[in-house]
Length: 145
Image 1: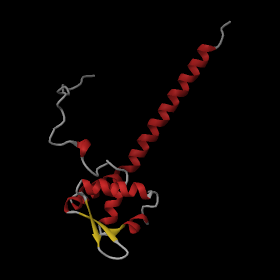
Image 2: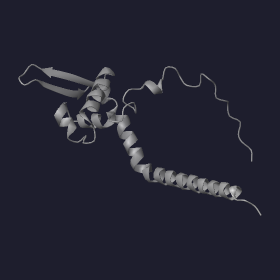
Image 3: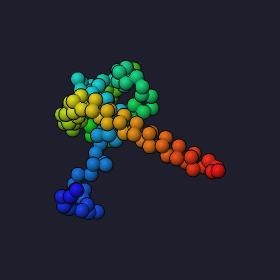
Image 4: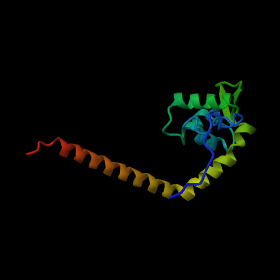
């Protein structure tokens, strides 16, 4: 079997102008995409966001909103009312992520079954290999004769 010659990977392989690890929202926080979907239709109050985000604690929701605000994806607006009212909304930068989110969701709908199949196959193979290895160790540990 022959392999085609490809260039070796270099230490400066990744483009420094595209620091994927620091991209806000895109995987940096578990709940960011769900929060963005909740804000897609317009500004929402904290208590409104908690309704569809049933599994999130108030602390984590606050942390997520603050991180998204820090990254410029979400704005926080305080109203001088009694009782105080605060709303969160997507900024233009946050809205610009909706297209890539839609593309990712479409990819997931199209390929999720295959992905799950591949995972199950991998896990079954790994389990079979681990079982065979355990049996080989047990066999080797048995006294001979």
